[in-house]
Image 1 (cartoon, rainbow, N blue to C red):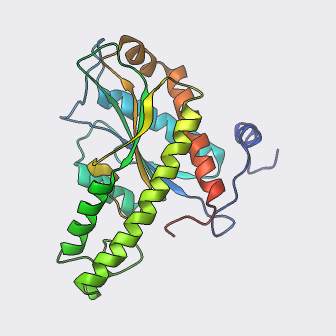
Image 2: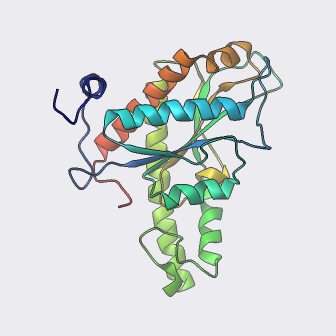
Length: 257
């Protein structure tokens, strides 16, 4: 084993095909993982009394460690501990870290205990349109798009540029969501129509492909039990890593750098 490679990393490289590196040979995409809820916001509570905020942070840490262990990615969390972070601040933190992908983790609860399974959300078209209008209407638009200063553009040009960026990001998000559904469906039970769309605030970055994963329902005894098991969390993270590998293998030049 070369001096700069550990046996664990070597084995991981053998298990998963090496994606083509984006742009520069040594560039590692930044994956920002968003553990839902936190602090004074516990999220859903499982039938056994476990908080959603605890489960999402556990899975986020496992996912981050697996991503870094591949040697192909950098990874960061929007919150490192049990702290409250506003929804818009989560997106802002992802952009500050130069995220190439944004993955928000949740585990919802319903009034019906018989519903179980995982689903993946990307931003809906209507929410995308509203976000583009909001960004274009802001007085200070200097950071609306990572590489373009819209503050010097007219309202009409700014709206067109934001809309173009948002459309491309939305398409990339949908492609990523479909890849995740394919990979995670091999490991866990999925809801009917597992790829869905909604206007979640954490998915509105105009220049970062973003998805929200509902890892299961804490109102369902089976899902609630599985989501607290380290073996299941490892399987979930492994399938997400494979989805991320597929995303960058198909689009090796996609990054915010």
